[in-house]
Length: 103
Image (cartoon, rainbow, N blue to C red):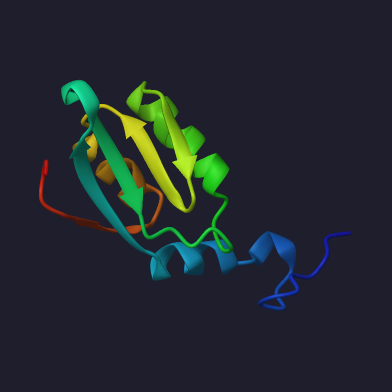
């Protein structure tokens, strides 16, 4: 027998908490140039208490075929992947804002 979500009170199979959390996130994408001219794509604005940031980082790294890391509540991907990351995040239900390109 399925349990009841402690946040929204719906049965777990009907729980909408994660979808609502995704819609409320204000995610910002930006590129940064690091040492030796290496480009890094930075995903900021993720509230890690509502979203599983480890799973999201794993998904982004897989879809972009790139290495990356989590620093605080930011995800950093090696390379310039703004277009791919934006498409993946929109497909997952996030609102995405893109800042200017390289600094």
